[in-house]
Length: 273
View 1: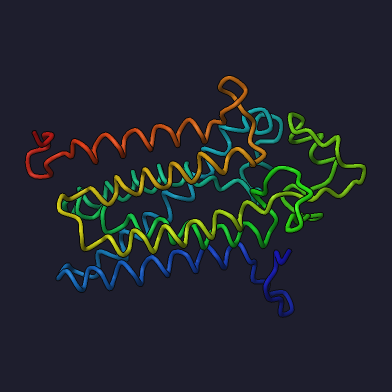
View 2 (view 1 turned 120 degrees about the vertical axis):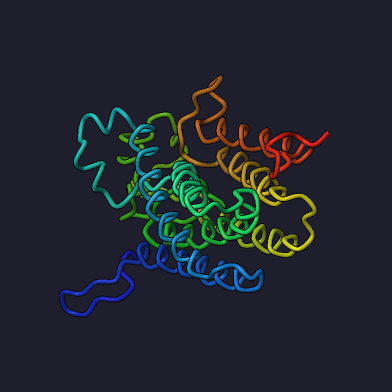
């Protein structure tokens, strides 16, 4: 764990914050280059990334607070200002809303820009998961696999006490020690995110209908999150099998698949026949 990358006197550079900044600047650089290539005003890129960041952080935090409502009611200030709890699916909703407002204000095609942004969401996600790993957040279920890791100072720590307190539904009976090793799901998701980014990036010039790359993103991201949830600590709500994130992932897959098969005509707002 490396929660602090660099410390010089009172100045501290936190790894998660650094990864977030890296993610947004990477997305800005790629979007700026794409807009320049397509002869758009490159200043729009900074507006999109700025409001995506604002909406993403707010949406992620709101989703986290709602998902952990009991803990939020018991300690609202602690939950709101904690360093953890930036849930990606909430961030995606918040970013989409804010960016949509920017595009509407500038009278730009939502479908065209959704395709431009789709690969960037994936690379941003991959970089963000590196930050999660460095601070010990969003890890997976207990595991004894050779590559399983522990986060004794994680958010929360991977200890028997923490699991009993925060994840009472997780079975830790196979572990006789206080420190528990877990699946490094942050690493799994980061690798998957980088690979899916490369796939979407290579497809960006092969899209015949505006919006299709974004729909493909919804399908791929939905499948990735759906399957990784089986080895994450999130509580299962539906039939005691599926978590809230998996339900949202299924919705993402359905929406992406539906509109990929029956795309909306961006100019008319009606489905192509």
